[in-house]
Each structure stands twice: as structure tokens, then as C-alpha cells.
Figure 1 (cartoon, one colour):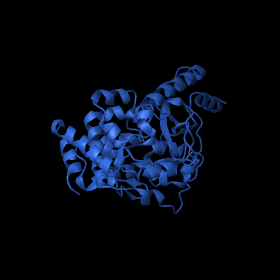
Figure 2 (cartoon, one colour):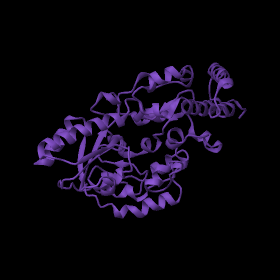
Figure 3 (tube, rainbow, N blue to C red):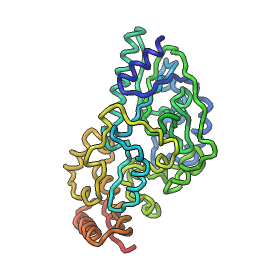
Figure 4 (cartoon, one colour):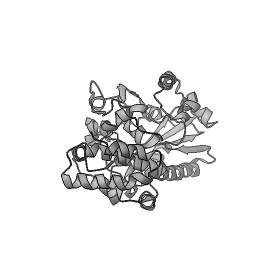
Length: 354
């Protein structure tokens, strides 16, 4: 059976699960429009620009009749069983700098795109001429909607895809194809009355079940947002310098999260458990070297230092020992005079009396 072959090829490429979705996403259009009209996309203007095209795969890629959906788990291969508790504990250590788990290894865009393309070529060899295009968080695609329709999981209240056997610690990818592959069945949702992710969000960005206001989301603020981080939100960022995993750390289903099959997502030593002081010691060349082939590279040096400044300000307002406090203050004072127009006000805020 072709679908079984496809699943076997995908597993050999490092994917954990494959599904096939129909392209009629019209039921999702009203929710998408309401989210955009509320301004919850923040400064991500491309989302509004694409509008309903996101919910119409055949408009994005003419000729599309099915979407192959793929799940790739990303926890580093050496992740301990108590990883949620360990990650949560690090958030309480102000001198530490926390990078979201998914970004500690290789850029997932590169990994998934290459392997999805290989999968598409294997399918083409089996069926003959095939119109196709691959995506992974790289175009106006309703990834979670497609994943939930094809059995990859269900949409959690934090808006991420959830699977009973894998939690939410996985990437999604898609192959738009012009052949009518058999559909895979959706799975039932299992969030029930749980509100753990909503309660855990540091900034209250999950404004209602299944609705996130990106303008308050720490992942958006530290990655997508290119301007100053709002002063009132800075204390809530804590020591998170790139992304935020809090809603996933709180999710009971993530006790079933699976380690990656690929070494690509193993944490780089410089990003696994860094301190703020260690990262302030980097110059721009160090930043580029340590983030080569990483998703972090795209935010650039200045936004990286903006994020460090906010977390450093929070650390200085927290329970640091005297020697660490002096060292961190000195590091900020050294950087301040030559900082650019984005970074300098954040450093000044960090050094200001609480």
C-alpha cells in the first residue's frame, strides 16, 4: 500500500509520523479572520498580507489536492525523563540564560525542508510525475489545522499540535501534492478541562483557549518582534533570551514527549545551559560562529543583545549573589557606551534601580 510505503520512507528519514489531509480548510477561515482582525498577529504583517490564502492550499500551490503532513520530534537525544522539571527549575535561576529547547540544535527549517524534499522524490519515483512543494513554517500554511485533520494530533489550548504519544515537542512539515492519496483520520482531542498551559503563560498571552495574542507572547517578543520590548512586559520575560516553553513545560501530555531520532537537534554546548555572563562575553563574531546553521541566527546580533539586556535586568532585580551581581553589572556597563539605538535603552533599563 502506497501510504504504508510513504510512512516507511518517512521514518527512515527521521520523521515520527505521517498523515494525509484534504485541502478544504474553509471551516478554519472565520477563526483566522477573527484572529487577524483582533491584531493578535502583532507585527507579523505577512500573516495579514496572505489573509485567507493560508486556508486555501490550492490557491497557494495550484493543482494541490492533498497535503502530506509530517511530525518530527525534537527533544535532544540525551533528554532526561524529568526534563520538564529540570527546565522549569532553570527558569528560577536568574543568572542563567534560557534558550527554547527547539532552538538549541540545528535550524529545523533546514533539516525538515531537505528531508521532506527527499520524501517527495521517493514518492515521485513510485508514482511517476508528481507536482509538489514542501513547507515547514516557511509560507502561509495552516500547519496545525492540517496536522489535526490528518491525525498528527489535535490543537491544544495553547494552539500547538498535541499527540497522546508525543506531547507537543515536535516540528511540523508539509508536502502539497497533486495526487489523491488516501486520507488519514483525525484523532480526538484530549485537553478536556485542563487549563495548565493558560495558567502557566508568564504574560497571559493565551487570552482564551485556542487563542494567542502574539503581542504578549515571549516567543514573539524575543524572536519575531524587531523593536523595543514593552517596558511593562520586560519583568515577565525572566531569563528567557530566545523563545519560551512554559506552556509546554506545564502540559501533562509532554511527559510522553519523544527524543529526536536525529543528531541535528542535540543541544550545542554553548546554547544548552549558558549563563548570562558567558553570553555577554561574546562579540558579534562569536555570535555568528555559535549560531551558524541555527534558527537563532536570523534574529541578528542586536536583537540577541536586546534580549540579553532584558534578562540581565531581571537578574539584577533578582536573588543574585554579590559577586555575580557585580560581574553582570560590569558587563552591562562595558557594553552600554557603544550599544546601538535598539540595545542601549534596554541596557539602561537593566542598570536602573529597581
